[in-house]
Image (tube, rainbow, N blue to C red; front, side, top):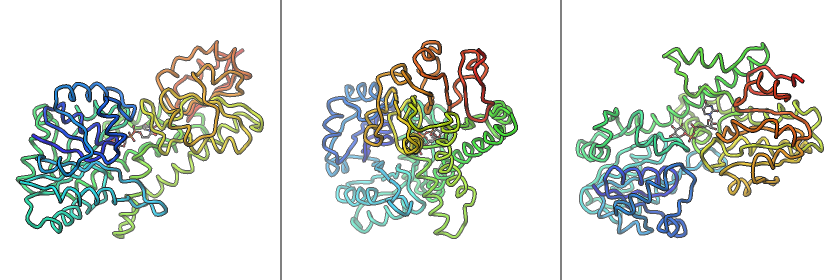
Length: 438
Ligand code: UGA
């Protein structure tokens, strides 16, 4: 099966590479000439564990190629995936569909023989139908169907998520398109991965409902964490206990500084816009957005409170990206928290294993080469992202390097008793704060 993937962002690149691994012949197309040139040299523009290997193996096997030339990729393809960006439109929170529609116009020009055009980008309900209209208008003669196939992969574990998804959702009512999509996902079909065929509108909404639900789960446990702090309860025990109830489930119940990233903030806003447009209020999602925004700002206050006086203090920050195993800084809590601390007069020294190049574009702080350099002379450490390498720091060494042994752990990667024993003042999320034992 021959596949064209339009867009080489996270979703396009990972999906294209993984579909070539399934045995399909995939061409990934992007307008960005520098990106295509780099990909052709084997350079991967994003940090995603395992991606470089999958790309290299499949390029070598001649199943995967990169090109700028959309028009020549289209006629040969059995399925064309649109995986371009759909950022929040500035000012109003609507998903910006201009890249999707531009891709549709270009695809229309090249259609040759029956083709399934698939929207893989996260797009508001009704978009696949609009793509169909664009194609139909430009090419009344062409034979095609437009299907929706949302992606559920997570940054940092995207390859694994693609290879072993919980489910695949395909929105189409055409039997011909269904047959093509079954062929695309045949290896997963053989693995008995549930493949759900729905209408296109349903498929588009499933993506937003899934992300909004997960964002709600996180926001719920974050508010429970706040209550825990007031009543001397432990949010991790609460999360574990409620998560063992199969109806609730244990995943996405880690309290923290608020969710960030390229998806939850954008998709919750876009869902709200849809709900307003159609006159079906989504008050829970509305509250989730407001609570999460306020939370990030409040985390700066929490850090300030742990320090007492912030003016003139030096804060070591470990982790800048919105989650570990990515270099993505989009809507990362650090982007709200650190400027707020600087405004209070703090000096910030930070280290992130993969995110510093990206962070330099957004933050005016001191970047350090590792965690130990960052904590040297600091009045407090703040853990903002739970990278594995921060989980087993040499606490004695750190204490000796710091001006004062204070840690604010916004990801709960250490235990209060352990930190008290190690001689730290330790503040975390939804758990008791402790003072040094000696
Ligand atoms: C999310 C979804 O998990 C994917 O299923 C979806 O495909 C993707 O969005 C998308 O729409 O493309 P992602 O944004 O990569 O994936 O990352 P998550 O692992 O979901 O984390 C999002 C944010 O929630 C991070 O800031 C993370 O720190 C936070 N989080 C997550 C918590 O604070 N607590 C948790 O228990 C889980």
